[in-house]
Length: 251
Image (cartoon, rainbow, N blue to C red; front, side, top):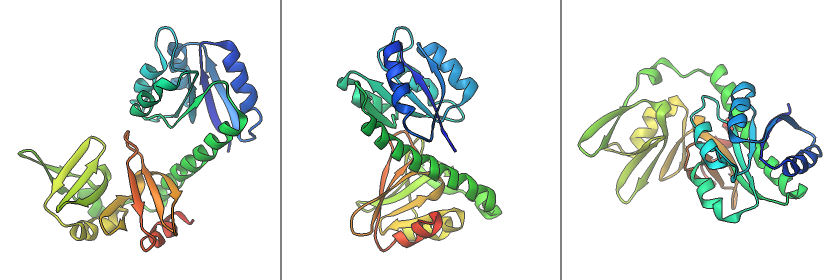
């Protein structure tokens, strides 16, 4: 299946150059292009591309501002900032950029970007298929994990939990909107959450399979996971625990 791409750049020569290079990558389809952030937002809402190549310095709605709006869409495209300026890189990744490429564009660099895009979209498709084939049991739908923040107790549903990690004697639960303490041990959480799609990735971490955005082969048979939150949280999968991950994703 083709990867659907939208290009947003106020400079026509830059759009033409990018279209020419993307045309040499066989599984890429240019779905839309726009010369402004405002028009780009309209087309993205209409056509829902998989990936947006986005310039940063544009009059009116600039690329960083547009990316913040796109982050609130029900289906978020992957954002690849395509700009002539290196100095915006940190800001770009603060707003969850998938990648950051510099003008003038090079085919080899774009091919590396699309290798990562294919992996990420492929894992998303696997997760969606897994949800259809293996819906969560009823016990997971009613389960609540008590979490603590300041003087409050927040009951968390399993699907809201990205991961849990042991650190300096505490066990922390991470969600899309922050971290919480729990009084449970990691072993206790594993027993409760294993039926809900969680696996042990390391002696000090537990991960929700539904929130894995990218899987990167690491050293000596281990893996590194990139989660689907704005911070792109990284989790190490030990060589010992990699078997469960590989079995689930058929890798």
